[in-house]
Amino acid sequence: MIYDLDDNPINSFALSIPSGDDPVLQIKIDCVTGYEFFSDAVSLLAVEARHQGDVSWTNIETTPIDLTSLNGLREIFEVRLTADVVAAIQRRAFSLRVQKA
Image (tube, rainbow, N blue to C red; front, side):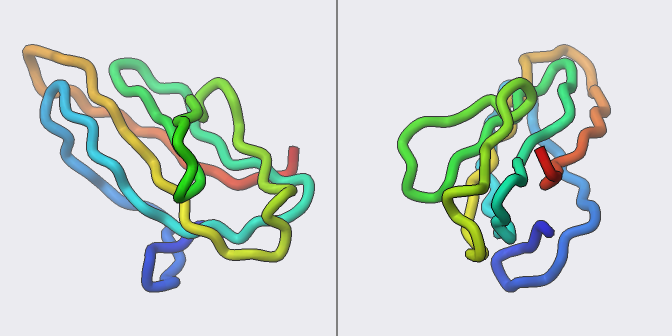
């Protein structure tokens, strides 16, 4: 399950990102052995994540983050959404998911 920082479950959300911007969101995830955190691949937007405190970002559209080492914990993850530079408004829909590998 994915939560906001106040431990409220997140089922969906909408966000407006200016062209070329890269906001970082913080979420909490219930970590379970054998589960992964990943995102749908989406054009004109890069979706990366890292466990809070980690240095490197992971492209979770292509490489899921294995949650096994954090089993039993509800941990904070940072999600960076990097929008391409575009001339016109674009709408993109994608999912952040935690699912058994």
